[in-house]
Image (tube, helix red, strand yellow):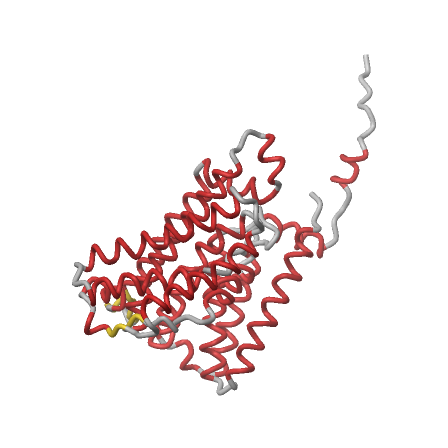
Length: 342
């Protein structure tokens, strides 16, 4: 008896239809969003090394890594928020407030470095809790919430410090420790860079291998579908903002070591640069798609462009222009990738 196979459904016929080379590229980038920033990073390295061989020297690359450490750390928290289809404009203000509280407590109140550091990270947690509560309990848009808290936290930091900086010589050794460097072959790596690397490994593992990470992606991809699937959306969002706040508090420690002081006027471009690193790294501004590996590559791309164009003698305004063009291209590519239909 011969069994006749039913005709392929329309969906099967669509899936089996031949794809053009451009569609295959779109499919690969949709599945692995970190590929495009990796290619940009490699091309940037080759181009800048060809323009000025000093760019590829261990000393130059060591400086790039140290310069990228602060923005790279902030971008971890920013990635978590953007994965949930939100955005955090208060990253710099939270970091400055955490840094200044820790520094002032150590310098003015004589608290041990470990205690001052713990309080600083706690300030970051509280700031993240406020952001998360306003988003989940009051149902305000993340953009509006963090735009408001940007001014609130920034003003509190200035009022608390009266606009005064705290120099490294007035701080305990622990708070300056992240700025210390050690040799790795021909490179010199700071303790802050090592902390950032560990941060990426821990948070990256949590996103890729735990139920919490899967819930973060699910909430960002479709909040209502996640709720119907039994995910406690508000709890996930609150945990994201809390985690991000703790990361910003930790970044304050890295910033003290990098800057050699605690200043309320530091990292004025932190908000834009952290968003830039995340977007260039392939994380979608619409949530639900991206990876920390891409964010790390995005932060390195920004560092490469700033250092490479500086060594090439390009005016600083053109460097800003180049980074802006990269952001626009990254968003355009993201929109194109999101149109892919499996």
